[in-house]
Length: 367
Image 1 (cartoon, rainbow, N blue to C red):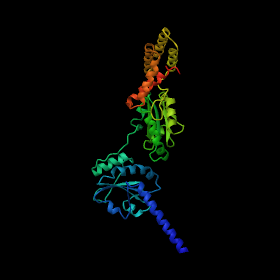
Image 2 (tube, helix red, strand yellow; image 1 turned 90 degrees about the vertical axis):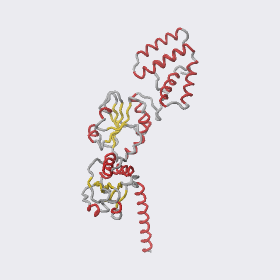
Image 3 (cartoon, one colour; image 1 turned 30 degrees about the vertical axis):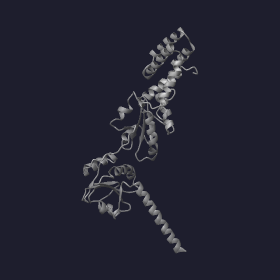
Image 4 (cartoon, rainbow, N blue to C red; image 1 turned 90 degrees about the horizontal axis):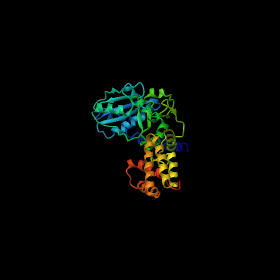
């Protein structure tokens, strides 16, 4: 029984190890795992090789990992470049052979040589890609998906965040932070929802890579989200929930916008309370009284500025059209605009048409 039990345990352990090795391979398939068994077969042959000597427990190695995986992905189809890594806990003699004394250590092995040179540049995918391209004579590029989130660095932080014409939401993050990775798609959706608002900026700052910026604003954990409104460039910490509707509601309230989670305008966009009241009065009035209401509306419009002044022009246009064509004009025009919005409309025209439709509803009798 003891022999049978021991054999069963042995087989179970082997199966588990095979399973784990498959899992590790699937996650790191673009970075070649190097061991004493395959090192000489992979390194110093026809490919130039960048090799990371690391330890699984090393914090700096963990921070580098996502950037290094990106690097592996960039060069996986490049025939003359290999991106590899060696676990120095498991393979100490191999790491000692190349004088590894700290983690992570990055070394470049030219094609046909096992005499490496140390890499001492930045530990981000852009810097690593630039280095490998220079050493291997390649032209690989980081395939960056389009993003509506503005990336902040010391070079542009002040010009973006401290701009007194902008309301700016900033996420201070670290590339290795799990919560930051979870937030990323949510934050991207928020940025996309507000991309048409010229005075609203949704931005992010790598506060691990640019620690001086994190320290400047008292960032002590990741992610930290701060809002920099036009009238307060000291910044205030955002402490609300972190789902798309929560961010959208927050920005609408603080920036005076009317966006929905899908980036469209809500039914309140473009509406001006004083002119809404005048619209109701116009529909209830007749004859010369309507002209008097129009004159009062023009006085109100003359006091407005910015986008409100632009929206007021639509109100005045509708006032005049209703006086000339009758109150049925509002219903017919609103229905026409609704049909346009429900069809294949030019994306650049959606906001304008939505605002016109919203304003027209203030002239309908039910309002």
